[in-house]
Image (cartoon, rainbow, N blue to C red; front, side):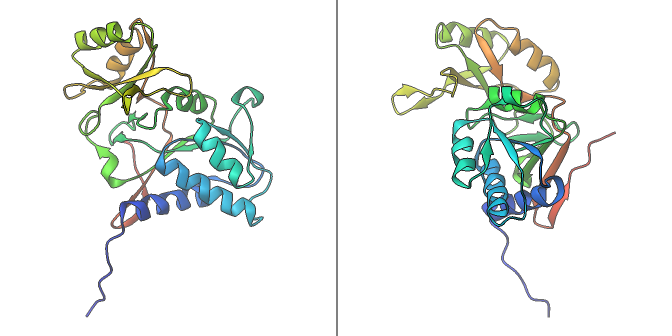
Length: 238
């Protein structure tokens, strides 16, 4: 009679993906981009533990948020500004949604969407790590699209998003608007099923008052998924 094992928790699944990413994509003397959010933090912790143990040496990191930078420094990792690095070898980050056929992503629930995009754009390879709950057939199925906006005139920007078919809600912390590291607001915007993420991304970015949005198109190079049957790399359609 086979022995049954309890299912892994979501936290354990994300941890497994983080370990896989370090094993597969990181070696000593690399320039590594650090993502933001709970899954990216597990990667940073795994990276930091191996650096502290002397398994990985000579790492230079660039963080997409102040929170991730502080975590990296707590492990003794060197953190530099993006402008001090010509090119990152790899960036490892999480995602809120992953469109399985295209690797298009929804990101930014942690509020670092602008800096995450800047770090990704400076990277030779962007690796996304997640558990299976983040997989969707179309973006917007589970999560609203975060849109970073200027505080000045944000309600007018919200109306422009409504004209695109969205339902924007100003993100709050208590009774005050949430502020990004760049001191901007975030509008969490639900849309009808997104059949053309690239077209929507272009339309949102063209709106006056929009700083950046959480649609990450043609950015992910590899996608690592932890599921009930283990850790695997997602294959892009076509």
